Length: 152
Image (cartoon, rainbow, N blue to C red):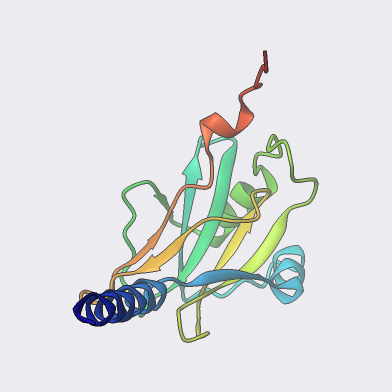
């Protein structure tokens, strides 16, 4: 009987931990609107823009709503909208599984738009620290993804 109660307590604790962790992750949702805004060169001027990867061949460009704190440790600030359009135009299309550039809304765990994403990489983790509110978007490039696997 005691082991049954312990199992139930462990199960409930695990569910609570999973719910807490899941609550701090946002997501990318495709946005044809932002793809059109890029093409028409009407991206929001009040976003802070960053790129990751190489200067002349970036992996991704993000625009972050200026009301959010952004952890830019793997990102480089883009100072002008003209430079934003150039960076997006020069995005690396070397990802082996993606054929088209993706524009996506960056959403917080509650579904609110907190930014925009441009990349040939279609997925990356989006995390918001529940204590500090700091937004963290990982570099989508994974060097291990391009490895050729040889099976014996």
